Amino acid sequence: MKHLVSWNVNGIRAIVKKGFIESVRAMQPDVLCLQETKAAKEETLSALELLPEYKSYANSSKARKGYSGTAILSKEDPLHVTYDMGIEEFDQEGRVIAAEFSTYFVVTVYTPNSGSELARLDYRQTWDDAFREYLLWLNRRKPVIVCGDFNVAHQPIDLSRPKENYNKSAGYMQQEIDGFSKLLDAGFTDTFRHLYPDTIKFSYWNQVIFGREKNIGWRIDHFLTPPKLLPLVKDALIYNEYHGSDHCPVGLKIELN
Image (cartoon, rainbow, N blue to C red; front, side, top):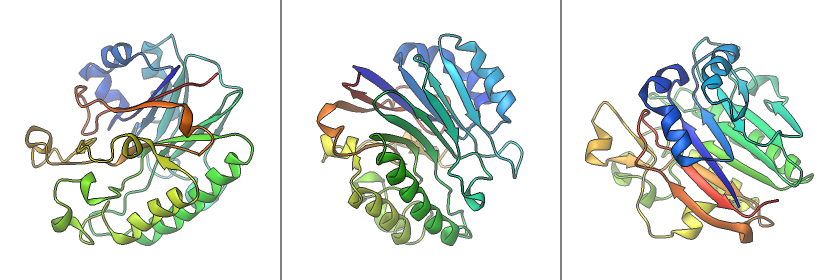
């Protein structure tokens, strides 16, 4: 049984001071995927030296310092690790890492946010199309487990105030919902919603409005699997008990070699 965890840490250097190492050791993931590390590659790898039991791989933004960024930590050495999608337009912000193992890929993603004024909504739509094609290309070689902050609540059950936010707020625009739907239609399954169709649980809370304290939140962090792996999924988890970021970790337990 493999235990995979994904966590938008909202700054790796900041969360290390907020019990991050203890939280990771309590969860004991085999693979840990991080988003929004907000640090240069060397800074991220330096912070992750506090977890020497893992091999660490980091990707960082080339366009803006201290922005975006992803990382993958694995107890088992991957066969191969690649960074970005090979498309210059989408490869400037360190948003994608793929780790190849013997029978599967793990891909972590920090999907672009459309922004408070929706200035990047068009960019986000083209990103969604490119990322879906990238996953399908990988999936032709080996099954892909993809996880991360997808920056979209897919259904009304996935956020506290769907009516107030629909087509007004980044993360719940119809174009973003459609982008996620196309990913599911392409064969990927939202593992948490598959196992828990009626459960209301969130993975992100706006700190400005004290969303976590009031449990006014969004479920925008996901683990997706293709049909070949779905029968092997044993549980999908949202770890609300772990703090340190405006997101909490999400997890997947799956029977893999």
